[in-house]
Length: 153
Image 1 (tube, rainbow, N blue to C red):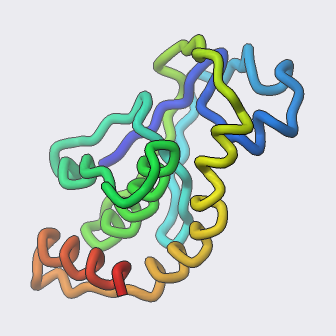
Image 2: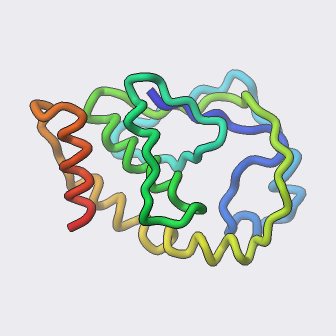
């Protein structure tokens, strides 16, 4: 229900990868075109807002959190939405490249500072997501509400 396409040339990588790897390893990247990866429940994969398709049954997953920085909101949204997808029998699919990206210059140290909260909180969030359960009697809307409440406590 959510399809994340990889990107040729200069894919979206976090600041740690950009700071610790040579630019020759983080740019001019090419992927196989026929790649398809689906992830089983309780196996999370970070997704972003770039080159991502949300099918109609997952439009609810287009919501971005407002309590996070813009460098992390799509990652946290991805984890949250993957957990909800499992409740309705859906999954995330990683596809081969469908875009070519030439990235704007970034200050990778500033990016790192803005991503630090995400690095510190991601494990706890995944543990909380895995400890949550929902009765589908409530429908996806009810599950969204109970998951938001669960994460806030």
